[in-house]
Amino acid sequence: MSLIEEAGLTPAAGLDGLAQMRKLIASGRKPGILVSLEFDFIEVEAGRAIFAGVPGDHAYNPIGTVHGGYAATLLDSACGCAVHSCLTATQAYTTLELKVAYHKAVTRETGLLQAEGRVLSIGRRAAFAEATLKDMSGRLFASATSTLLVMER
Image (cartoon, rainbow, N blue to C red; front, side, top):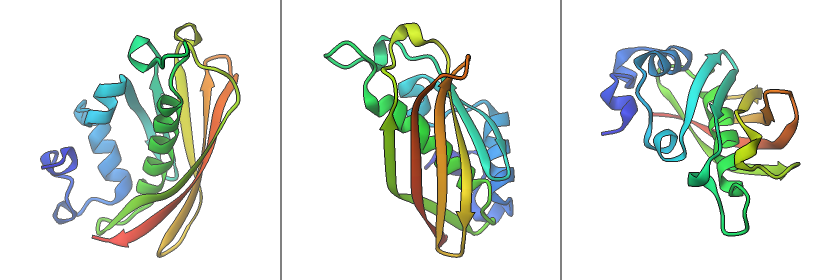
């Protein structure tokens, strides 16, 4: 059973995507990926989602920087949940493509990072989103564009 199902956020609950995401944040429960990579889902509104985390030793690669997958996961989460916030109670989505650009190396000294995802457009079958990963002073560390498949559950 998924965290969404455990929280009663199934289509039968009748909640649209935005209500589902708000309920998930309010529950304080974290999906496994947020636990594993130690980041949080902190804000959602229609067409927009924000995740935040502090990169630490858990996210390091052997060459001495935070693994690119850490940034990619924050960006993918922000894009996906921004799209989820625009769905009906009977719709779902999955990422078809994620293109990430890395602008600066992330290290444990980087501090708190926020990934903000925004929906660019959404239709019956496809959605397009973008996200940025910035530190608290607004420096850009990575950005992404995403294509997502929208489907009926």
